[in-house]
Length: 493
Image (cartoon, rainbow, N blue to C red; front, side, top):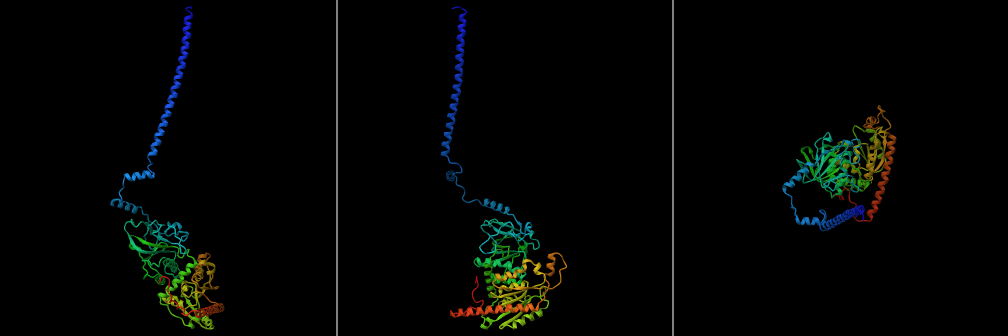
């Protein structure tokens, strides 16, 4: 072996050793990373197992089991402290918001939907009754109605709110018992308008155990009213009872809250025709009882045909009143059993009108609020109505209210005569022309009036004869006599 070959052998040996060493180092690094990765995975799996077992052993805070353990470990006080209650009550009081009683956002169509009166609250519909509001109720979440309303000229200055009985507004007065709250677009003096405002309350009264209110609160366009006309006050007293009608003046309260309150703001509203007839029957019966109109008619009187001319003074009166009376008196004399009366509603008391209507089979009268008395006649009685010139073209559907009322109250509306003569309207605007004609006097047509009277008298005579025959047949089949008018009990008696 030469010396030159030895270094070469060492060099080769070192080269091999270096290669082996390098390969070993690479292998060691790979193994290290593999082992580290496996250890890390094992650690993660172990943590997951531990976490899973922990969660299964301990319920979530909002689970039923957690709540049970919480309640077992911590017992809250059963009764809050007086300080806490006072604080809660004070917070409720401070949260009460009074809103304008009259909402001008709905001024263009104030009577539609929830109306502009207490506009944030929707109506309750109950069967065949008119839509209304009742407090407290489920709809009000048990809250009472509160009013701060003393302004008689601007309904936007009056306001309303709802409040829980335990937290009434500061300085509020609680008025006990039932309160009837009415808002009408018209008034409480005119017979027709006031009757329309009161009628839904009469219906509600009858349908709810005949409960009479402790007081009334009246509004017109959200403006406070503290009185009603004598006629409607007497009708209300007669129909609902409970003594004299008490109208509350809210001006003497900072705010008034009502233990119970019924609110009507649509007048008769969605009340069905059938229900209206039932209510008119009740009001007729109770008005006659209130005025002691309780007589037994003789056989001849039952067969009589009783005609009444109920006339007006001033607006929509007849131009030649004497001639009109003469025409109807002449035609009445031609019919056996016909008797005629002439009266003016302006000088009669409520009970005078009730008695007169109870003795009327045919009511002859110009269009006007005095015709509201027609529901006080016996059912199936007749109505003859008269208008000034211009009404047909300009008055709108409101001119038909007594035709509708006749139907609702069970009467026969025998048509209307409209004066074709009179001055021509000097205006071009339709509203101005209607106001020009609205309260004009009414003329007459002697021939037409005579023929019309003869026709209606003949129809009524035939109807009364048929009723008498039917009654006679019925009497023959029973021993007891028919009860006289007004002697049978009225609803809510």
